[in-house]
Image (cartoon, rainbow, N blue to C red; front, side):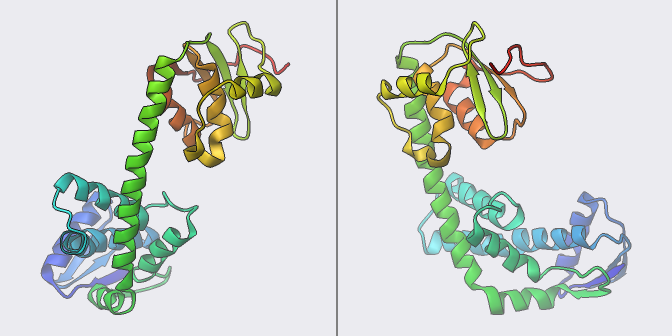
Length: 265
């Protein structure tokens, strides 16, 4: 159990709302202090971070977007704020070390040790702004960059959608989508060799540099341009699979809980 102290009654009220959302049990000690009865300090720490972001950081980020970056469109600002929240509250960017560092910097101010009995929320807020106020500028700039990159990516995806619609449609294909390998078969169950796919790629007048690390997985489908792509995936969360769905849209069919109809020969 840990006691949380607040400087403002409003902060305590809002934190109680967050505790209800997380189904955590607490008791009120006074107008500025409460005791959480659940012994789940990791979840409590996450809840403190979420509250700090939405109550304290988000208004400051909006202020920066308006006064320093001259954003006035609410939809644009909401998109940027969504990226900022992903950076600070989720592990969406866990493979991007600098963005992970930003998240870890914020988390350390609201982290509860396993045996910690008292936590002063107001004091930790002050410590954050005194020691890590620079994070506001970094997150704002990085979130704007993410928005711009996403816009460019959407334009690029649209160009690929238009490309596959204009090109000659190829036969249906079956795909065994493994974690470390994508194997493509024609509609008769014959596996496409690497040489065949490389030859098809040489005849394809498009290069997808924007995909970089996963170009070798996307390009064969652009070259074959199948009328339908039946995918048997090991992992549906693969981001490359999502990219493929964004390009081919209704031509993609994800086949779940069924055996792949062909062998590996």
